[in-house]
Amino acid sequence: MLIVFQFFFRAMKFHKLVSMIYKDNDIALKSTVHLGFRIEGLLRGHMLDPASGHYVDMYQLGLLEHEAFSVANQRLMSRMLSQRLVKN
Image (cartoon, rainbow, N blue to C red):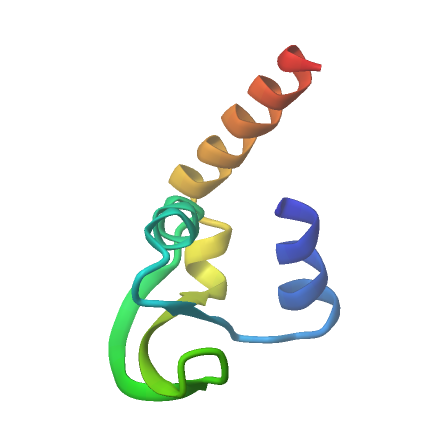
């Protein structure tokens, strides 16, 4: 994720990344928040689920550049990378 953050924020000069997650996808929500994204809102009936024909709610999350490169987030990313390397 550090490489992704470097690319979007430093190379592409983005100020903010946005993530949209289905309300019932707790694992994706938890993972995204763990990366430093903040929940900015709940979009009610935002997407049509073609399988069920019902509209589903989605969370919108955002991450600003200064949050992505904060000391706390850098430590989190380093710890996640070291844990991944140790497992392999």
